[in-house]
Image (tube, rainbow, N blue to C red; front, side, top):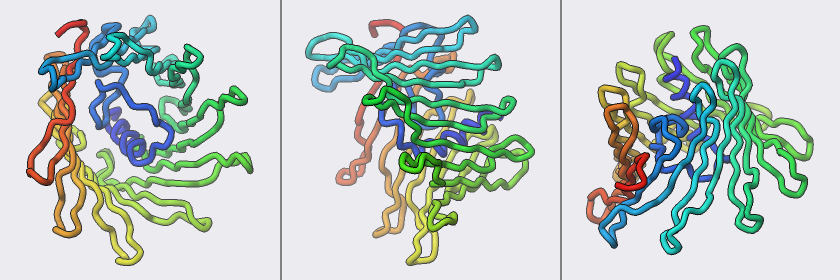
Length: 317
């Protein structure tokens, strides 16, 4: 059940995410991975990037985590490596709070302000639950002039009788009227009662009504892990759905995502064109140890390495 829920939250967050302008740590592969738990229970994770000029691995980033008494991470502190100065520089810090069930209640992201030499609030995500079901996600940004949190966006989530998300409504805060305005809505369609959704319809609030504008077709393997997602956009002129983006994922026997590939539809050739992909390697405990990012070169019809990263709890490779 948790896997299915992560699929849906990941889908909506990736489809509509205007608040998270801060790059995630490189230890996160693109799809459905939780940045707090994708490496071993160590307090420091080093990310190395392969430098083609020196033909060697160099520091890129490090994440320092702190845990509570239940060994749940409560802080993720990220620093970037400055090659020229050979020093670590503060980048961002994320703090988490939980309820007695281990459900995440708040996530506060702060960025380092070099002018004040201190951490500055950036955004706050607050989750509200009914029992153990997440019913609302509130996104807020920190406003420096007034030094207070300002409402930006919220998700309202409804469930089926089998405890699967059946709809997620996105509202934007109107600072003038100080009210929430409808903006987007995602409705899930299921082919079987206890299986993840095979179709998601996206709607936009326009002229006081919901209008369909997007569609997601999803496929899964036998373990309910998403293996394919195709995104369509509604075209009023054609009166039909037109292809946009296709994503394909593969996994190992333990459920670790090995490959993520993204394609875009080429309307001149009427076919899917390769765009980018990620490949990941894991250790025997299921923790990511290496990730390679690729970009497709149309001129040479080959994959080109855009970045190679290794993750280790050791300060040396």
